[in-house]
Amino acid sequence: MKFKYVIFFVFLILIAGGLFYAGWIQIHLDENTYAVAYTKSNGYLKDVYSPGNFSWSVYRLIPGNFKLIKFLLKPQIRKESMSGILPSGKVYGKFLPGQPDFDFKLIFSISFAIKPDKLPELVSAGSLTPQTLMQLYTQTADSLRVNIRNLFFQKVSESDTKGNNLFFTNSFSDSVKQMVKNKFSSFKLLNFSPIEITIPDLKLYKKARDTYFAFLDSRSSFEITDSQKTVETELRERSKMELLKRYGELLKQYPELVQLLVSDSKLRDEVLPRIDLSIGKNHE
Image: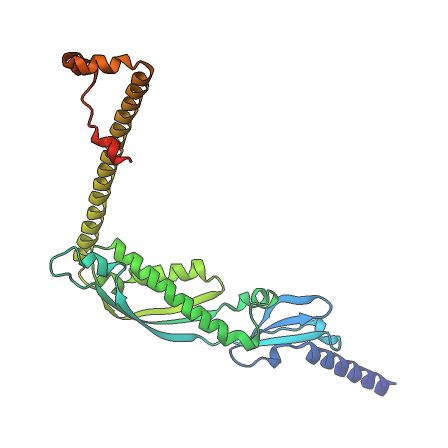
């Protein structure tokens, strides 16, 4: 009898071991590999499975019900280089003697990675599959480059004389970290390191910019004044034409006035104002 109990106990252990192994997820994950589970019964699960953390799921015990979607999440390290002219620098430079150049150069190293806890959200939304992982990394790197460029221009616009020192301190790096946090919530910034930054004289750039906008303001004021003068001239001409029209209608109604005005020059000068008769010709 004792032998039967032993056999039964061993049988239970084997079944339990088999069930434990069947539901064990962690054993299927290699280093740096994270996974999201899809089940036919409950759809995508909210859990993220990672190596080094014990994970077991009862859904794996149902044949054909459980699918493990794996992602090899390695940090992406990129070296980026951008150069050109500061915003509108070519235009601003024309308003200073010698037309100075406002060229810049920015080289930096950046590393980033997907946040593992964002995998269920990205996968369930259809934004990520194991096959599109590298495509998402490339798109994110391109978008980071554009945003860092815009942030660089913003800092240049806000700075007058600090020059390169601003960008080699923690100030710019902290701004980049905050930008990634705000705009790239599914990613974490691992490192950002400026390598080379060449910036023109920011004080001169600001002076050229101020000179340019002062020129626009003065030109705008001149155009407004000139426009006002044109309107006033048109109004005066219209007033004279209306007056001539009324005199014409009056003389048609009382033709005897024509002879009276022709015969008496003094009366004509007192009644008729001095009107530039060339105005009517200009409107013909």
